[in-house]
Length: 453
Image 1 (cartoon, one colour):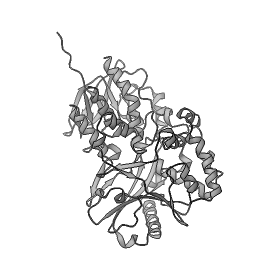
Image 2 (cartoon, rainbow, N blue to C red; image 1 turned 180 degrees about the vertical axis):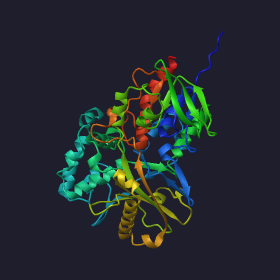
Image 3 (cartoon, helix red, strand yellow; image 1 turned 60 degrees about the horizontal axis):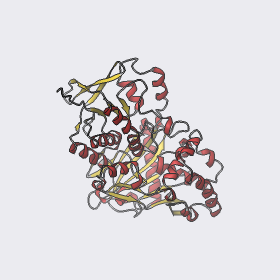
Image 4 (spheres, rainbow, N blue to C red; image 1 turned 45 degrees about the horizontal axis):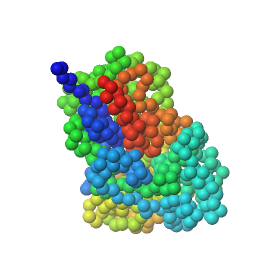
């Protein structure tokens, strides 16, 4: 009898997309090898320790708590208890009139003191049809900008939409598709099985999610290699036959495989990992158009006193540069040493501004002034600050006509054994949850291929 040794499925990238796909595949008994070019797991969610505080690469939250795609995967793998979560529920607006409660549901909109009562009723009339629509119907609105329904609203109600967009998309309303916004409202509607709750890992660091998934992969005899960069994917006769890898010693080696899963932005991979003319140029050009960035300036502040007991505060109004203040230590004290507190303040900016040090300095200075005006003890409590300016989750495309099913497909027609996951691919949601949702959609296709070969 001739015995065949199963080739591993190579997964490129140990972020949320790659590790959710890998965990689901090993759970079904498939052989998996995850290759990660950096020394850490987590991809864009990788955290770091700085002066005894745990700093995330931006502020990440798990949207819709236990209804999220990430939590659904962990539950299906029966490892959800390994990820301890802290709820993000104490959210507020801040305006010139003071603090206002953030609505947790449709009924709460009538109590929204941020805007006049007549505006609340009008807002409810706008949002109710969205909240009770179907996902299929929202696809009809994917070409429509959100500003189509917000442009004629009063300034206070527009400010509410801006705050919601900052929480849900880390972006401004003029960059959001009405279809993508509607899907977010649906997933937050309890009458349709949704929830408006959010969560963050209780032990600090959003990459805790990736470590839970990685541990599961290793327990199931999967293989994870850090400091391994994929130089090239070999395609012969329209089939995947292997990958060329550069290891931690800077040595090249060929790993034979008949299936590869790419879990970082598709337009980057298509331009880097293949010999010329392997992928149709028109297809590559089409995918390149999805490379739209959301750029952000964020600042971590360490404090020696607690400024607020709330978890998230959204300054609203045109006068505020700061669009979100996230009290990380109020969500979970695990991120900071005893006696110290950590907050992040953030604002969307133009991509060019992330590379202009003087512009960043001015934005940070303005943000500090604004926080000090809201919290007079801020200046005297500040221990240190650490600014970041970056192009946020570049594969999240929320613009009209570039969402959901318009994104990169999970397979390229005519190439066997090549798959794509992550938030640059067909999936809905934002960031990490979009990456997990893409794995839910793609893994059955990978399994079907593996089972037939």
